[in-house]
Length: 112
Length: 114
Image (cartoon, one colour):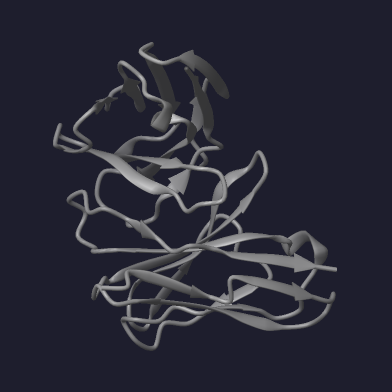
């Protein structure tokens, strides 16, 4: 089942912070975060696994609340390069299934 | 490594025609998948494979076939193209095993069905 992302769009000035949320009605094994720039392929940012393990980006952090089936991506001190569409992808269930379903995306625009 | 490669980059088809979108990876990844991306719909999973000889359906499999005869290749076949299949198609791969492996996407194939 496709996860729900919010907000759908965010407009920021450079240096401002943003939070993007991803939620599912199903129990989740993992949450993946990707960023896509216009006309390009999605690029990996972060993976959060059930049990608390986290692998990802230096300047971007995320949380994963397993009980609520929710994840949030935190973008601090945003830069112009952060502009793009952010997607969360989820793996449902109690263990690895390798079936990754993506949300509809959050469009982030950062202005000088 | 070339990573994930897709061919063609762009294709125009007429309704009813068939074609194969090619996808290859040179990272020895077990897991490969196909997504389509439409405006406002995000990335939707079409089919995926956890290894040679093993494939499974995703969210939107109708109208598409796949096979996985080798670890490297994962072609996507459109049997009878329809205008609703106009989209950007992305192939992706990653190691399998469930411990947080990065998924790599190919550059995409833009398909227009008239």
